[in-house]
Image (cartoon, rainbow, N blue to C red):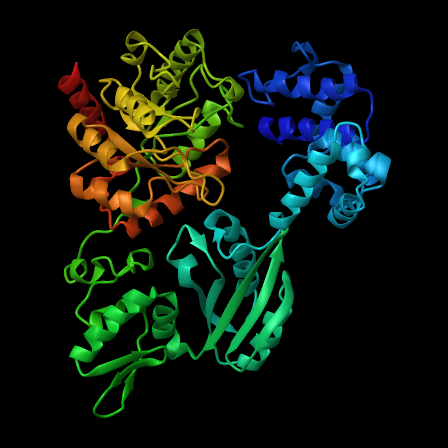
Length: 575
């Protein structure tokens, strides 16, 4: 168990204790212990005696050691066993925390959402200390939208469900091959439902096994070649269509059901010009009625004089003209670096050494360690002294490697007043400086742009991270004039980030394409706070193909020498 998981477990214990309404000092002890661990730059493995840290007492130290050694906590297990499991889901209702849920549980016997709703309707909640009529009415309003199924779900929400289904499909021996289709395969930011194309010569057997998949909560429709179900996992529900096809129909069915609709219209126009018709079953010659099928989608596109068009680019936005030649699409295989990641020095879960070894394991030649700057106290941001100490440590680590380079870096806040979090005399000594906005999102567009301009026109800032500040489906971001930001980035030689987290995918595909056409360099990064998040870059590269970026557009594909030349050029332009 890494340090971030230990911290999360301590916070969870504190929440359970709040619900049980135990001694407030005991609750505070677990929160203080979590804060003490977060404020220490060492990994959990390096902290041999937690009780030596200020804020950690004997009882909480014992829990930390148990988590460290076994990955479990008897304290947490006992608390979980003593509280109804559905009670914790109420934490996702706006306005409810552990303390208030504890009151509802202990004084009204609320155990789940339905019993809370009933208590509100009977006007019992308003009688509790700390609630009142206004709070009760707000809870009733929140119930109208809470846990209701939106028309489209964020990509990050549906990916785990799709992966669970795919893992089960892999086990079905009757399935020859299968693939995602629809908006998920095109890696759209939001997804309405899941689509899978399955090739099999044993359709009856596969139909029955699909109905028995783990996660199927109800059956919408069951036909000979199509199964429609509702899937539920981790309190998320989404419908899924499984289409069963013969193996020789797989490629054209996959193309047809991947879409988009507008892309399919363009392909049908090409077919018509050749005296043919496209359907999910193949390509039919209009005169003879003969149907041609293809082994792969690549063969299908070649039939129409096109190079393979990646699913992400099938949006009727110029892809037909582009793929009349053989352009080079950008893939994860092209990556030589990830230039945005966090470690235990700020709010990451793993050490610099662990993140570097993971990056080396991915075949990268270099990486940048970019922990948070001092303003972001909630993320344990680095003071100037701590930043310089970290960079001295990185320079020492570099002596160990002949095949890899660690760049000193930082993700520096652009402050609400427009200042940068570090002075220039500090920034000029850093190999790779990221600037980003994490606060005061409600400021006017004029003020937001003043802040971004201060960063873009600083000679020592190399990258603007997650430029729109959005979280897909959760937060629109701040009011930014992206067109102007692209213009400034081109003028100054500043790169813009494609933050690869499926929760962000920021910049949006439209603006990525505008940036590419303007000649602005793009950086595709994981923004990883733990080892497994390094894999997020795969979503970023898929998103980049949607904007039809090429390897040369992305600084992560460049050699270290070319990257250094890029950073030096900006300094020459603006110093």
